[in-house]
Image (cartoon, rainbow, N blue to C red):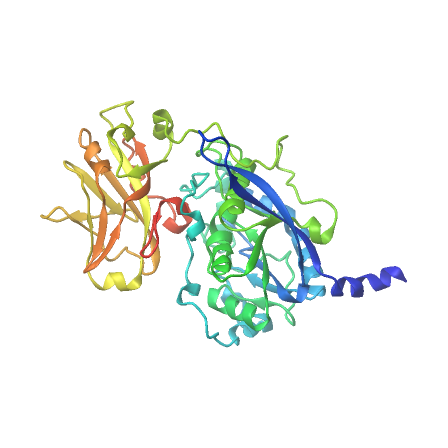
Length: 461
């Protein structure tokens, strides 16, 4: 009899959660601050809580990412069923897959949501940073896309996707079949404005985000963590039912799962708290069978020195612009210096020519989203209008030959559009060498670089 009563009892009970977060603490008067991990208990009313399922696609271009995700999908489906039965709102958000759900009542329910009076105009856009991240150093290099497949396995997987009639680079067409959608109660949407309307209409105060991948879509999508923070909602990441796109062959050269935990640590410091599925389901949090480590929950890697010249040669390291001459790596004074950042260009900026002024003397090259920019007789770089993204994030790369690299770092780069002006003084990434592939990255800038080197009108870097 007691067992029969349990579901009804649970439906009336709050979700009792332990939210994990990090706060800056002073180490000594001579040292900069470090971080302490803290927890706080909260009780969430299920009827005021939504669970957003981010980009749990039926296929992905990275085979290892598929393997890691499919390990936790059964538990994710169980969690969604439990939250649904306790009165929470479930929103399925498989980006780019809305055509598969045109006639689904859960999709139609989302489309019919009426606009909200206080609806922000940027809810439809990717969110690459929030103010709390301005002082952060992003913990991993994901500019290669983060694939960690064995090359032979990856080729076989791409061939299989092609045989299914899919684009191996963008193979997703629907949400994964292991996740059930209740067409009578759930919602389906990949639009930030629609999700905001759902949350507002249902009186949602609390949001649990889960799915993939934390360092890209979970953070940045129009319905992702950053947008929920900007909307003033009490949002958490369910850290054991997510993953990151990180390739151990990239900085900081740690295993995949440590790289993922560094991203979770970034979230806990600068974005929002995290929880685990056992707080709702009981049992133990999910841990991947592919994770062979003995040390877990890594917060940071103290061994990495951002200012070491040899480290700068091995990867794109943070640097300040303007910078002192000793910021230039001294290991080989014949190699060019490269610096890069990302820039958000509002749509109204593109109504006039966008130009970049730099302090550099001597030979200098500039690329925007992988396309080289032409330099005018006045020394300004003309940003190629056909590649600049309206209300989007653009990759900006500069290359200076020696011995003129000092001048590249010595002054303030400025982006201009008519009377508009955006200073690009602040944090960039720097590397020494002569690899022409560094002029671009193999994916959109919003996915490839972290928020620490983003410049945007109205914000600061």
